[in-house]
Amino acid sequence: MARSVVVTGGGTGIGLAVSRRFVAGGDAVTIVGRRQEVLERAAAELGPTVRPLACDLADPDAVEALLKELPGSIDVLVNNAGSREAGVGGGPHALLARWRGDFERNVLTAVLLTESVRDRLTPGQGRVVTISSIAALRGAGSYGASKAALHAWNHTLAGQLGPIGITANVVAPGTVAGTEFFGDRLDEAELVRRAGRTLVGRVGAPEDVAAAVHFLASPEAGYVTGEILHCNGGELLGR
Image (cartoon, helix red, strand yellow):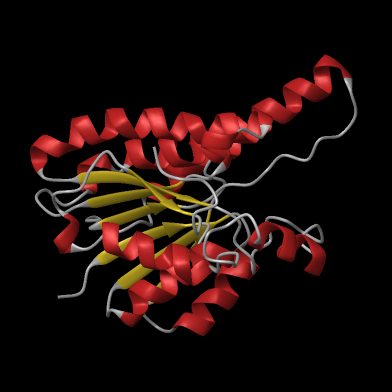
């Protein structure tokens, strides 16, 4: 039976791979992101069961407007939207901009939407999966701190949703090639270096993360909630 799936940041990279995986399973997918043209290209690639909706998920007014367009019932919500704020300049103003930007783009984008659609999540089978990062456990300043905040929030969310049969979990990827996240920093030498830090001898692909998300969103994962699933090839061992 087809499910109603919402994927944020669904136009590129991990979000696109996640959307593709659900489409392959016959689900109807709504992809949400800031760039309408990117979303439309992704929807054209993925097929007629995909609907693109542009929204700045860190803006509460934009989220309120988005609610009118989202499905009335949501079986799976994947919070993938996020980015790393570029560090520009020094001093407290630049520091504030960096920390606030990372918090807004990585935490608020998940929290505002999830809390706004809680009453649309399907009781008994709903799934919330949030994308974090290896940085949440290893460090990386304001970006790592913002991703770590998602872990604490998810623990609370899982406790609130569990009694009505809805699970809430986190996937924390390591290095994933084939996304916009690293820009031109992930050259061949850096890929080799990062692959050497894993136990499997390679960096990840968006499809690796999509497979982890798809499992946590599956009916078979109904007894798994409040968890952080590491998807990093052994670069950082689970704890």
